[in-house]
Image (cartoon, one colour):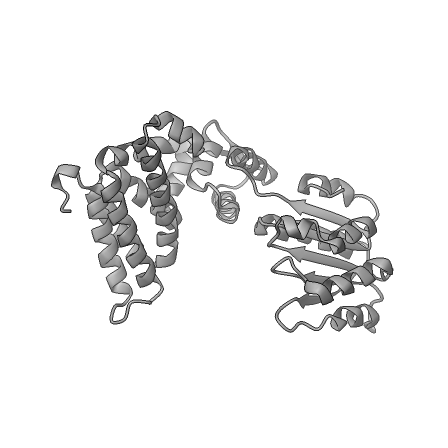
Amino acid sequence: MPLRPAQLATHLQGQLAPVYLVAGAEELLVQEAADAIRAKAREAGFLERNLLTVERGFDWDSLAMAGISRSLFTEKKVIELRIPTGKPGRAGAKALNQWCDNPDSDSLLLISCPQWDASSRKAKWVQNLDKAGVYVEIWPVKPSELPGWLRQRMQSLGLQPENGVVELLADRLEGNLLAAAQEVHKLWLLKGATAISLEDVRAWVTDSARFDVFRLIECGMLGQGGQACRIITSLQSANYPANLVVGALVREINMLAGLRRQTDTGQSLDSAFSSMRIWRSRQPPLQAALRRLDSQAIDKLILQLQLLDRLSKGQVPGYGLVDFWIELDQFFVYLSQPSNQRVA
C-alpha cells in the first residue's frame, strides 16, 4: 500500500527499503519527501549519489550500469532516477521491473515523478515496485487543507501564528504550495521563532511584490482603477515577470466568467460560489465586479487577456514588453469602470 507523506517520517525511523518511488502532482512535496529519504540514506552510509534524468533518448542500460559501478571510496550509493513525465515507457518499465526482481543491496534506488495520473498509478512497474520497496504517493493539498498545512509548516519552524494568520496567508497563496513555503520561510527569516500576528502578515503583504499581484486584481475587481494603475507602475519598476501577472489574471477572470454564466441561468450567487468552491474571504471583490460586468463585458476582458498573454510571451510582431504594461493599464481601466461609463 502507498505511504502518505505524513507516514514517511515514521517509516524512516526503521530500516531503509532497497527501492523508493515518490510520485505526485505537487512538486514541492515530492522534492521534500525525496530530500528526507536522501538524508536518511546518508546516515545509513549511502554516501555516493548518482543522478539520472529520463529524457528523450534516455539509455535505460545506464540504470543497470549505475548499479554495477562502484567508487573507490564508498561501497554504498543512492541512484536517483528522475522521471519528469511519470511514464518510463516500455523499455523503462522493463528495466524497472528487472531492478525490482533483483535489487542491489549496496544501492538504494530513489525514483521521483513530479507528474502523476491515474494511468501511472495503475502501471505494472509501480505495482512491482510497491512490493519490492516503498511507494510514497503525493496528493495535492486541497483548499480546505491549506490553512492546516500552513499552520503545521509555520510551527515546524517555531513560528506561532495567531488567529486569522494562516487563513490570510492561505487566501493570498491558494493553490501554490511553493510560494506558500517560500513566504513562510521569509517570515521566519524576518521574525525568527516567535508569535506571528495579523499585523505582521499584513505588513509583509504590503511589502511583497508577489502579494502586489493579488492586490492589483482585488483593486480591479473592487473598481479601484487608480490604485490598480499605481500597483502596475510598481510591478513594472520591479521588473515583475509579466507571465506571472497574466497567469493570476487568467485564473480570476475565468472564475468571474464561470460565476456570470451560472447566475445568468438563474442560479443564486451564493449557490454559484458554493459550487465553484470560492472561499468566503474572496467573495466580496467578485461580487463587486459582477455588479458592474455583464457577460459581454467579461467576453471583452477575455479577448484583452489573450492579447496580454501574447505580449507577455513576445508573440506580437512590432510590440515589446513596454506595450504589455500599457495594455495592462487599459485592461484594468476597463475592468474597474462603472457600467454606465464603459465604452463598448
